[in-house]
Image 1 (cartoon, rainbow, N blue to C red):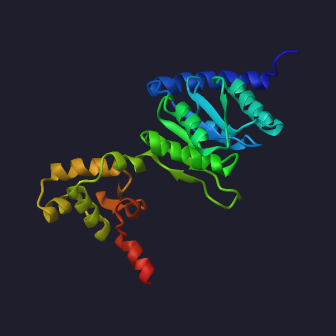
Image 2 (cartoon, one colour; image 1 turned 180 degrees about the vertical axis):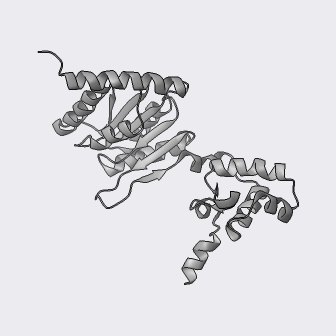
Length: 248
C-alpha cells in the first residue's frame, strides 16, 4: 500500500522548509528535552512551534520502568518525527531515587548541544524538579524552560535563557543605576540617562544593549526606555508604574 498523498505532501514541504530554515539560521543544532508521561501532545506542540529541524536532538525523560501507556506516547512522538523528517527521538528511563536520577539526567544533559529547549509539562512532576536541579548543577547557559499548567485557561509559563545570564555575569553598579533610573522614570531616553548619570551616550548605549538582552529593559514609544516585568526578579526593584498600582 502506497504512502497517502497528503502525508507525502507534508513530508516534502517539511523538508524544503527545514532546508531553508537551516540555511538562513546557520544550521545551529538545538536540543529539545521533554518529560514524558501518558500523553505526547506537549511534545508535538513544542516541536511544531519551534520548527524543529532534522539535525535537532530530541530527548525524552520518563520514570522507569516504562509502562505501556508511556511507550505508546513515545511511539506517537516517533511517528511525528518520521512524518516531519526529524531524527530518531531518544527515550531515557530515570529511577525514582534522587541521587541516581540526577546523575542519569546530568550525564545526558551535559553532552547535549545547546541551546536547550526544555518542556517539563508531561509526566510526573518530580521529573521536572529533578531536571531543574540537574541544570542548577551543570549550568543554565542557553536554556529555555517551558511549562504548560493543567487547565486550558492557564497561560504557558516560559523562563527565558536570558534570565539566567546575570547568574554568570552579575549586573554592574552602573547597570543597576541605569535600571533604577529607568524603573523610576519609564520612557526616559538615552540622552536623558547620559545627562542624569554624567556619562557619555556611547557608554549608556553599550550598557542598554546588554540590559535588553537580559530582558530587563525594553524600548517603547518615542525611543524611550521602559522596565520589563523581569526587573523585580533580578534586582528587587519594583517599577514605578507597578508601585502606583499597588498603592491604588
